[in-house]
Image (tube, rainbow, N blue to C red; front, side):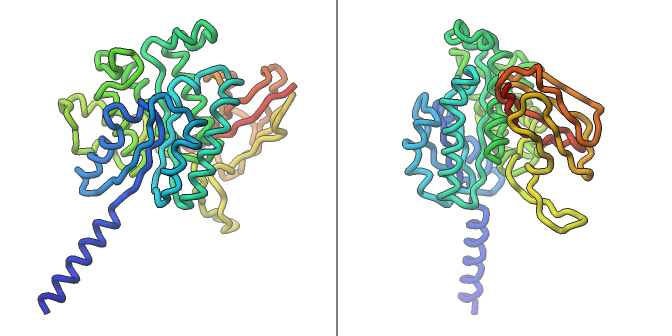
Length: 347
């Protein structure tokens, strides 16, 4: 009888451990491999009594286009709970036409491949950061890159676009870095090259991914790595402020919600619509009555705010006749949540 009870206890424990194992694939380059970012996230899981099994495909400088072949064997292994996508650090900040040709379509291809072999996967784009002093190498050809603010705003806009259009999660590491730069300028996020993350910078990213994956409060992370507790607490508080306090702002997955009247599932990303798209004069925005809106904002693909409204009709119309041709990101704020759509202006 004792042997039977012992067997049942062992079986129960093994099943419990198995249920707490998460599998993640990190696809990127040196911003992912430096300081072994996946292992930092894994250590946070371990400290919580759980297991994160991970693989990493991160050759230096690798682009999404290259990853479509380089990382395919990893993707085809299947059974991933999470797959992280990090583009080459500069490419998403390049001029819109170059980004739309050399990065955007390959982000779509990767998402399609990942879902083909992993039907239940959660995909998370890894929003990176502007270089400490901007990208002067390419700034001579594209001036917005000459400053940190210019480069960072471009990266933010492009990663928001990729996450929104591909219905994925977004781990906004760059946004957390921006918060720390503004509020704790004495803390060094960068290595001496002004580009790659210091250990502290990677720890910040790891806190961001842990919160993105689990949805838990980063203040509960008990593993500080090799950091002084005060430094680790800065990272955790920044992630709480930027990520945890507004998780829905960074999740564009096609989860469903139950409506009160029809009982039909509706995708969160389809709560509002825009038309015609492309538009050349007036863009109409259709907003459901059950979705009270407090503001709308339009950003161009340089990250600049080109339009903002705080009071508008139930179904507002935007005059885009003065907009330049190109792709724009529309953001609607409702009950503290943010919903986005991309649209194109073509005259």
